[in-house]
Image (cartoon, rainbow, N blue to C red; front, side, top):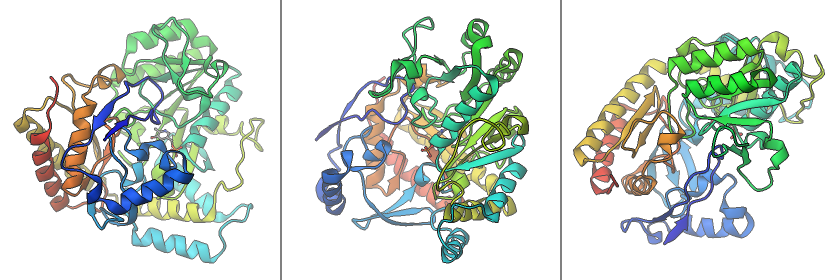
Length: 459
Ligand SMILES: *Cc1c(COP(=O)(O)O)cnc(C)c1O
């Protein structure tokens, strides 16, 4: 069976399309209920999924349908137990169905599910965010990461009175029209829409640069800096796989935006409360003007947030003139899940243990890949990591785009066969949760060793 790779949620750079054969060991008879569920879904849902990253387009084959999850494990409809390294793409840092989070949701539901009027729980969540993330003085709650970045960009434009923004190839900021953009073939050519339906006009003010390329960044700022509203970036990238910034790159981002009167936006939708309680900005000691959050901040329910300097945030309606609203923003159930999650993270921080689990998995995967003779580049920050099937170190999309994605697809399916659920794309970071045990990690390393021995990697 051959499935064409879906053009997936990162649209910041054109990725090669890809056809992958499912490995012989995997066939539909081993997952009849998922197969039937997918067939049903495809009748009424485009592509059978409500977000393309779930469709397994990048690894071939069909998605597993999930029945329930607990702690570090997913249980699919065919009765398979899987060690989960997706964690709902980031939110489930405490593990699935955490008792304190469930209890908070239950208690909130008893009091009514939505009022369209302010609640004290919203201030509690805002206070927890402000107390955790140094650069955030005021914060607005929204319903997704996409909404957070869209609103932060609008606010930056409204605050500065300028139109242009800079983003970096391989960084994903949600499906905001003006950020669904691919770089032109050279720095001098205009950015191109990266999805049908996005107009050339919408992306005309978006400049796409290569991550970690300080010289290219400086040149663009010399040319466009005074017309620039904002620079938006992932301060640790998760969305081309895990990629770390050089200190020089972040220092340049802070210095150049300040010099030209543009705002620096850190998109910490993935890294916020993940790489540290204070986000990636606390690891690198760089203070952005605005920060976007999502994923963990909702504890598995739909919450996004954007916050930062009070003088900037006070430009949002009704404090200021920049429009932004939401019928379900600050929803009581979502806010309860977020509050319970952040409270738990602050009261018993899992970050040291996550670092130990991450280091153990990193060491095991490195050894397994080396033993199998597979060329690789492994990038990790705490509980986020990616094993790139790449022959060169990955610093940005230029190198990431050359990874052997077919080899990754085989690796993915061999791991499924061994009870391990990795992100279903080479261009996603895996996540470890506080519910994972050292036994889970060791079982994963054993499975990866077997899987890697079966994967043929193109040199
Ligand atoms: C997931 C993600 C988004 C989008 O968040 P959604 O809740 O999926 O809209 C934005 N930015 C980054 C860095 C992300 O990882």
